[in-house]
Image (tube, rainbow over all chains, first blue to last red):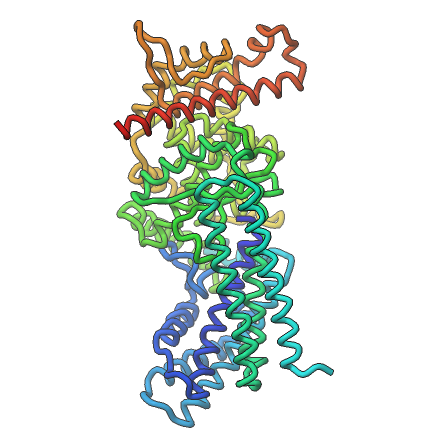
Amino acid sequence: MPAGIQSRTQFLILAEFCQEVISSLLDYIHGTSRLQASTLTKVLRALKSVQSGDPYSFAQRSAAALSSYEQIRTLEEALSKQEIDEAVKLTKELLAVAGASRRKRATAKKLITLFSRLRTKALWNFEQPKQTPPPDLRELCEALETA
Amino acid sequence: MRSPRDSLIHEAAALFRLVDSIDRFVAEHQNSFSYTDSTENFFRGIRTEADTAKQRISAIVQESKKKPGDIETRYRPELLILRNRWRLRHTYIKPASDAHTLSLPVPLISLATTHLRRVLGERMDIVILLTPELMYYHNLPRTSVGRNLVFVEVPYSQGPGLFTNLIIYHELGHFVFDKQRADRGNGAFTQLARVMKTAFDKRLSRIPKASDKAWAKRVLKAWTVEVFCDLFALRFVGPAYTFALIDFLSLIGQGTTDVIFDEEHPAPALRLRAQIERLKRDRWWDAVANLPSDHVRLSKELASKQNYEFVVSEKRVPRFIDAFLEILPQIHLLVNELTPDPRPVARDFKDQREQIEKCYSAGVVPSHLLRHGGTESPLPVSIINAAYCFYLTSMPKLMDKIGEDPGKLDKRSELTAKLESWTLKALEDCQLYASRKKGD
């Protein structure tokens, strides 16, 4: 697949993932559906793998959200490290408490705000004509040369 | 000023129209041209997806009436995502519609399909997309249609030919590798992933940022997959693949004297070194090593170069190649485990090559050879390799035989196309015999 389309596909997968999360949280807030534990578990797993600092696995299928260079870079651009930690905390809270409550709905709203920003960034990157640039090579080479 | 809902309806209507026009475009082409079964399946799937998309777009408009507060948070972004999905789809529907049966080397695709099914042990079909780029790609369209379909992009100018289209096998390698990844693979694949991780941890784990680590791993993976795909293709089509690769790299002006790795590909010198090693192990190399051809000389010359460098944006990046060289032996093991032993085919080629080439020099389709007072059918891969050897060494003689100057390019090009069509006809005959045999 041409590199441009490959990158755009990665951004689209990320935007679709965010959309899935936001829609399920909105349905919960409106009371039209229960909280989707499977979606939240997917969120938690994806965010935790980024928190670990090494989310890309050689043995992993490439279609997973938040595993490719484009997706992780988009996340780093959209949310600060503290906000990623916050998203993990909020997701854990939603998963921990059973039933519906006003507090839980407020937590869901906060998570929607973070994922909306990530979705906007992913859609923005999708529109960019250029291929995702490589990392800062000076920094990368320095780290490797001192190793 | 328009209300948010009016704007949403306007956007929804535009998207609906786009999907509808793609749907009509596909329907018109289905009625006007003949396609392979796999492309027909793909088109049927696209039309079903178009129906689903149109229903969803209409539903978004209806739902937004009940929940106007969700227009900006949910419905407009959903439309945007749907639109982008169809924008991506738009890019490969036209290339698929161009790939009707008259513009493709159908017998080669049938042979490749048989080989692919043998490796995967399941029904898989190949959809060819004729791309405006002068490049071959494996494509992964984001569609629910593609579960049993493998998408390969072929430059439209190379459509019905044979020789450069052998690169299709390399692209199939991409699919097989991804499938191993998705299915968590066999033992050799798990071992390869382990070796890659060990090499990364040993040489590159000092990279600080998570995204940079992902980039570095992607580079190592890309090189691994490229070499895997080369070896995968070799196991099925033998040295003809190496010749096709050299011809194609020279056609697109990629320096085949290169020792430079880029983000996507290992250096051609390393790729050819790995290929020659594979051909030697598979007993193919001795059959072509003394061919009086520039392709063989170039392969040997390049394979001897080992001063590789990884360069990104004109900057030399250390340690990546050391890591990759530790992975290389495991790629051979994975290919060995996934593909059938090619040594019987190499033997058949050695036995039949002379006879097949005799047919070509007389302008005869070599599906049946006169041997020992009877007839024999060579294996399809022997025919392909003999055709390539003939192309590399005997075209001037053939031109001479029909009274043409070997330097007359239009005649030479015409004759090359004939050689390819005789070969494709021979492949078609072999497939016919095989299916008759099955029927008996």
